[in-house]
Length: 458
Image (cartoon, rainbow, N blue to C red):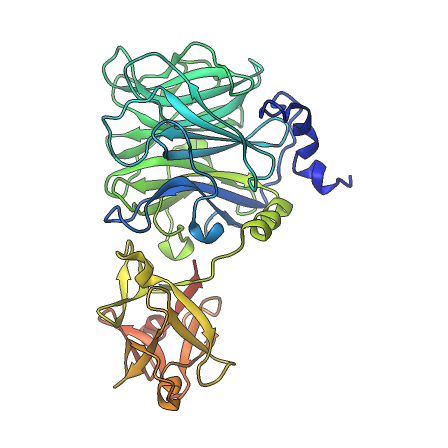
């Protein structure tokens, strides 16, 4: 059935309550197809310096694996109350098809800061945000961390779950119920297995079963129940981790016939890892190759929500795509092209300063049909070869420099869906890494081809 863009994004449904800032969350569900995805997150750099921002960030994807940051990876909205920053954001699609954003009231890493409140925004399209307020969840002398919400059809209300320390003396998953995210019921314990648990994430009504994933002892573990009642969930899954891991996020991908489980390493500028399963009921997961997914720069504790292809296009149009790229190594997919001491390298993410790994791919200085790699943080400098090694030098306006800094992009020598780069003035040589240093070399072996293949992304 044909639908106007305004109706499609839920604008008509939200209009009657615009004066209060609350959306009509009790209306019939306008479910989005799993044709695209939006990720929300905050950012932390390794040094907690440049690249750290405790506002709401968004990225979009068509496969829930490769992400395009919006607004140049800058925040789209920032809290103006409480600690003036957020962590652990979550995007809920309400029953009327519009969105609610929830987040922890905490700026930075002062774990002694106690707030019984969470941040709340409403949005019809994730382009504009209304009705900002803080919502108090309890009166206990403890935090309210990592809020998420889901629709409990049996109650006709949203269940708002979060991590807090109650009388047990350890972190448990608490729950309040609400219809509008303006007022909530009294808090209850939702899940307390007798040990410390935080970061609850739900998948509701999958084959008649509800799944709750959470952090336990630096690992990600699942519990399940045929009910949504507090206290009804029982642990069942095999734990997964990559070092200390937190912030589980379950993502359904009908197109791929699988589920993804995202996890975040427990460090500033954490590294995302992804596992997959064809059947949640098994409780077992297989790690995905890092070649198959890329996280937004400096992203931490993500939330992922399915959106429609129209919403995906609208978000890209409104916020714009990044004006820079990152290049991932094919055979070392934890590493990205960067400059360090003005030498071209591939180094492991996270990279500090992170701008060393961001590049503008501009028309080739010697031939606009080619490309040159302009540094983002040294914008007068370009990657060029000198004695076959790549280094970052200031452009001097000469034809020799222009030739050294120009490359032709070709289908990847190891994988045609990736990219390789052939030298303009040494056309028998391609950019490749050797002992993690970038060079231009003739390419002959399978290893050479892998060394010379990169994914151009964000």
